[in-house]
Amino acid sequence: MPMTHAETVFIKLGGSLITDKTREATVRLDVIERLAREIRAALDGCSGLHLVLGHGSGSFGHFAARRYGVHRGVKGPQGWAGLAQTSAAAARLNRLVTDACLDAGVLVIAFQPSASALCRGGVLAQMAAHPVEEALSHGLVPLVYGDVAFDAEQGTAIISTEDIFSYLAESIVPSRILMVGVVDGVYEEDPLRNPRSRCIPLITPDIFDETKRGLGGSHGTDVTGGMLGKVSKLMPLVQRHRSMVVHFFSGEIPGRVTEALLDGGAPFGTRLRAI
Image 1: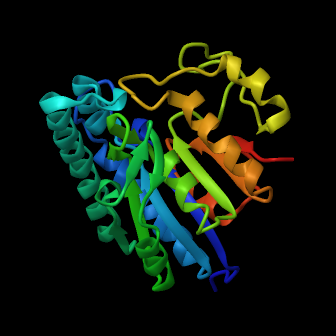
Image 2 (image 1 turned 180 degrees about the vertical axis):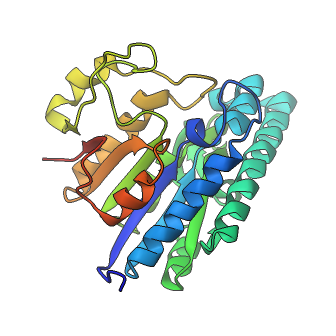
């Protein structure tokens, strides 16, 4: 019999996990399909589990954004062309994730963030949350993704999945946010450059300033700040919602996504929490 404990969890499939971020528009379809099956297994294992699923844009959106400077708020004809091209690239990857999830029996409904998002000075100021809430109420899995946005001050902006999760979490408060990437947590230094680097099991606001000195960017093309950007955006969220936990871990290891979704105390990766 499946568990019935009611819980809302946000889960992000990182762009570095579902694409090859060193090669433009290169998808890791086998990984996406496996992750979709693991999500389905978790839903089968807990009938009370409610998910908001997100994914990064990886080598689709990030390459286009950097080419046109969308993240820097470029205006004029070139900037608007970049907005259109980056939006299209991100949507292509989202279509692949959507189809893989539906094929695995995960009833996702994709929401294009740029359809309702507005930024001011690069910060997400508004986005339609009610349709996401409505999807959850009917047992569907809302699917969002890193995208572009119009910006009232600088013309164009990039909104990461972390930005979207932080915005949605003010009306749909999850108990946990799972950040599924390539490396198995947050490390003292980049473990892909220094294999001797140690994983930090717990990061609280008290030690964040010390910890972030060792955090860096991303391998491959990334316009949203790599690991440091992710932790920096999510730490204020756990400070505002003190019972919330953010869990970083690797999705390269088969079965980890199912385990983490079903067991909030799964013994791997890094957790951000207020205390």
